[in-house]
Image (cartoon, rainbow, N blue to C red; front, side):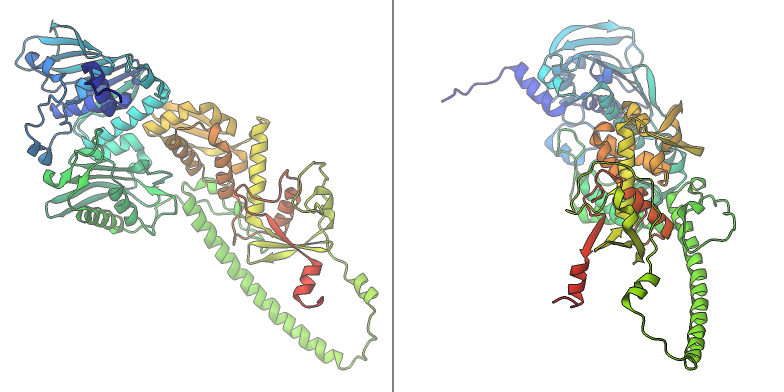
Length: 640
């Protein structure tokens, strides 16, 4: 039986540090929260190598008295609480007394601090939990921590860190959250000498949102202000047209502390129910102020998880506050009106390109305008069809009257009837020689068979009927178009021949810190896809072109969704490109119930027959189904 022993202090400290310090993000969080608790209104964070090589956090807070510096690095040493009862009425961000001891156990730490009562500052150096140097030094009011070589004495932990860029992105996101929680504090973040974030400390929350999310988001915000009992909810929520591909835009704060609480996010999303599309998430920055005794923050070492004594009351105030803010004004988006289309004679085919979607900032508005155009043309066609039906009826009556005066003609033979009823076939296209697999034994879907395909028409505004020799085929227009777009794009990527569709005017975007890091990490992959992107300074970028095969998508939505999804998965663009191309192809493809002209369907079927795998869309749904003439005749009991 193994012996039970007491671990040495160094091992105990490293185990404890592992619960609090996971990565550079954890160090920055603990030190900035300490600075806020110290009353600082100016905080600067500098990173080198993603924070792995060096982190420096400087503040103008109250400082630490020289005779208490050494004590501050002991485990469970804190100025935030005095007894267990204080845990149930916390007003500070930190309280465990583990931050400095945990950081010092796995890094080389230099502290320089001065209080307002001291003429000189105090410098303290500790490495791996061992005190190295200490003494007086000239210093400004406040505290400066320099943390070098994180996990230098625990190389296994260091191996589990991500790249410097990824670690930086975590810190950028954290600083954005902290700046929103304390708009009155001037915060600055630089990484490897490059400024990433800066706020002046004189802004309100909306101004911080403008700095972080850009003008478009800030101009579509609605204020939230609701008070019930001892709880008060404030902040801003975005209009339904402002949404994200993930929950990164849902930021919740409780008594100035950023928290991750599924119930609070559920309340926000429930308030948007019926206003946003599926798999779209709102932008909401909410500050909940409540009695500290009603919330338990002592749940997790990272202090981002909280529990509420009455979750129902919290859910209700968030739901009501967001819902009332959304419905305080009408929800009709105010967008630019597109230039009127040239009026000319059109057939009953409704072609989407007749409205220039690039002049419309929001794809939803384009869809609305397009639907109105479709409705107008359908009314015109309905009127024309009614007139034509009346003409046919009159013609039938005339023919019936004339038939009474004409002697009956002998019945035509079957051969003569077939001669006069020759089918109309599709024009013979340029035959492309390809080798392909097939699910049909007869290899129906091949370029060489196209001349034998007879396109009959459309049913349910979604499916196209085709006759091929002894077969009856039904093609799904969405699945067909989706597969064509998918193979076009994947083919161009494989050959590194991605085409680009120029945007006039170009798209100007303000990225968040996380989106900016994602773009820098995947710049080459975006270029291979066909994006043309240039930096304008700060977080502003210009998108001059998007992938040519996906031009019918909203350029802004396409680009932002890719950034959000890649950033959330912490993957590279190329590693997720297959699934993303499938998704983009699905969105770009003509949908069920979308009007499609006979000629357009003909072109799609023609190209489908040249694909490597024409039988299923990228998601596995069949592009067409078939029924033999024999099976059809059995259905009608012609064959028993």
